[in-house]
Structure formats: C-alpha cells, structure tokens
Length: 375
Image 1 (cartoon, rainbow, N blue to C red):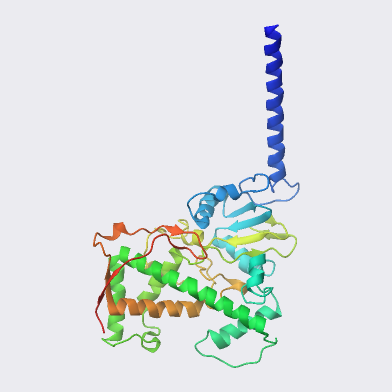
Image 2: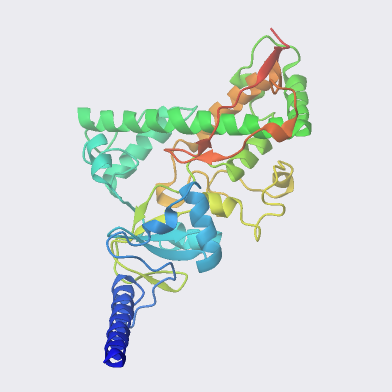
C-alpha cells in the first residue's frame, strides 16, 4: 500500500513539474517580442509578465550604465519591453547614424509622456513638438533670435500664443539649469583628478588674458583651444543627458542595421555608451583632451562618435550657446583661482560615481578649496 502511495505521489509531482515547465515556456514566448514569425526583431533580454525587462534595470547603477553593460551582451541594437512600451536602445555610431540621419524622418517624432504633455502645453515646445512646420519655426526662433550671438529679426510662419511662449521658455530654463552646471562640475572633477591637464589649461587662459581683472567673451573668443579640448573630453565621458531624448518610430516597415523596428517603438540613443566604447576610443575611460587635437570632432552632430547634443533634425538648438557658457565659466574659475581638494590627500579620494536623475550628476557633491590669484 505504501508503495502505491509513493508511486502516485511521484507521478503527481512529475505532472506538476511538466505543467510548470510548459507554462514557463509559454509565458516566455508570450512576453518575448522577438517571437514573431517572419519579422527580424533586434535581440534583447526576454521579459517577464507585466513588467517586461524592467527587472534588468534594477540595481544601484544608473540606467545608461546598465544599458551599456546589456549592449555588450546583446549588441548595439537592442530591443527591450519596459512595461508595455517596446524600447529600442542604440549603442553604436553606426546605429545612431541610421536613426538620426539615414532614416531620420521615420524617427524624428518625439515620444511624449503625459507629464511632458502637461508641462509643454500639449507638446507646443521645441523638445517634444511633432516634426513639421511648427517645430521648424520654433527652432528658427531660437537659433536666429535667442541663442545666436548674431541675432537677426525675421517673421515667423506661426502665431506665438501665450502657451507656445511658456512652453519654449520652459525648455530654455529646464535645459540650461541642469546641463550646463552638470558639465562644469564634471569638468572640474576631471581636472582635479588630472592636475597636469588643469595646469596646462590655466597656463593657456592666463597667457591669453595677460592679468586682466575679468574674463569676457571678446577676450577669449577662438583663443582657448586647449580649454575647448577639455570641454569636448568632458562631454565624451560625462554627457549631461546620457540618452538622446526619446524618439518614436512613426513609419511602418522601418529598419535599423537590418532589423525590423515595429511602429510606435520608443528609440533611445545611449550617448554615454558611444562615448566610452573601447572599439572607438583608445583608452576610452581615461581623461585625455589631447585625443581631440588631431581627431577633428566638433559639436555639429556630423560625427556620430560624438553627439552630446544629438544629431539630425532634432539636434539640440542650444548646444553651441551652452558650450559658450561652459567655456566662459570654466575660464573664469581657472583664471581667478587655484584649486585643490580640502583634505589635500590627493586625486584618488575623489568619488566619480554617478547618480540617476534628469541629468547624470555626481553622486556626491564636489567640494574644493579655492585660492584667489587674480582680482
């Protein structure tokens, strides 16, 4: 009798195990976007019910670092499901070029969240406006009349309502209040870790200004070549916005690097991953401004190895203006003061870890001791 009970229990457990395995396989197929016959979807981690691949982003690392690590496993074109949203993550210059240049019309639309829609009065700003005449006129307004040093008056093809003006002002203040100070803080952090770079930058600035009491744009225009290299290297290692603002696949039958991209897919370009790609940059994790001396890479968005402001039709219209502000602030800090860590214990004590937020900021505050040099 005991043997019959043991046999029945064995077969019950066996059937239960087979049923469990069958359910797991079916759930995996149901939640895996790549299980779609005849469609060549990009690789990526398989998702769980409801949450999709969100579990892959859990942990203390910022999301752009986690995405960079996932790209090492799944490749530079990676498809994830974040909740109910299919998300394409691009982590190479070639993939970024296809999305922002080769097929830029198909990926020129922004992914607008409900929160963004409220803050921008229904996407009437520059960042989230649908691609079309309205966006072109707003970019013209900013580039020619607000952010250009040589402002030009000209008529607009749209009527500027109170909502549009408020939305554009929100863009300007939101972008400038986060990205510029974040970049300056990272630049000072790297200069403290690399004293020889700081000494060279200070020497250049002090030779150009010849003991003047203050730093002005006219005095430093097109003269601080090494400081420009420092800013570029800072933006390569620490882009303030590590992902290009999300785009949306708005055309059917779109492709990236030979993969089929479903209509409505959110597209992220991991600028941080491209900037630290060891296949592209020699000593990718080291701060070496000299790398840009012979490698002509600028902020125009034409070289997709270096796109801190994006590229193509949705490139940041205020990038040049922002870099000019960074330049004059850094020049002032390095001209008027000598800097050191309060503890005087050396460069190894400086924590360079990042924290997730609107921008990729330092996890800890940067505390430095300044010695006044020029009044």
